[in-house]
Image 1 (cartoon, rainbow, N blue to C red):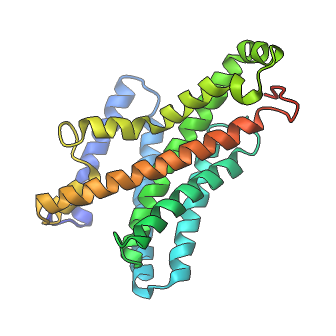
Image 2 (tube, helix red, strand yellow; image 1 turned 90 degrees about the horizontal axis):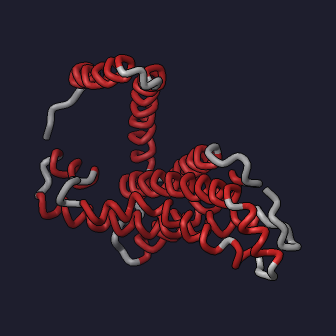
Length: 251
């Protein structure tokens, strides 16, 4: 296992300094974001590290559910912030992420892939919420962009007698695909181009590479199911908000 401590983290700051210098040199405009992100990520991760040690020690169901709820609330707010023009975008994001997480974790617990312990549920739940958040954000942003950009075509289809669902079907499909793109690319390059985080972490911790691979396969399938559920629910709920009960485009 790699020997890590605050000293090693300090040395790793050289890498962030390199990224900041390069960004400023090329005038990318993200130097400030990188500096704030460096400090913010360190504070947040150290804080959650202490919090998780406390929660793991409790092994309390309410503490576990509370942690997952907070993750979902923050993830929903972040996803919704990308598409504020969609009515009720926060509620849509929350429902989609919550159901994607609930179904996926519930099935894994029901069939015995993981045990009902904080050290399994919270890290895996965090991975699910994080990936579902990205999916929901992409779906909402793409859906709003495509529908608002193709308003004339949609209104023409509606005037010819098509329902709101028929008029928006192609944009629904594109939005869900956009939300799933990260996982679709993952399956194409995993093991060839990329060694995923869960697998890499286990290998660095001293686990057998084969065991790490099997765990990563399970994690990959888990995230794909969660992202698919989240993307479909987010798209269904969001697209309905864009049309009135009389099948008129509202945005």
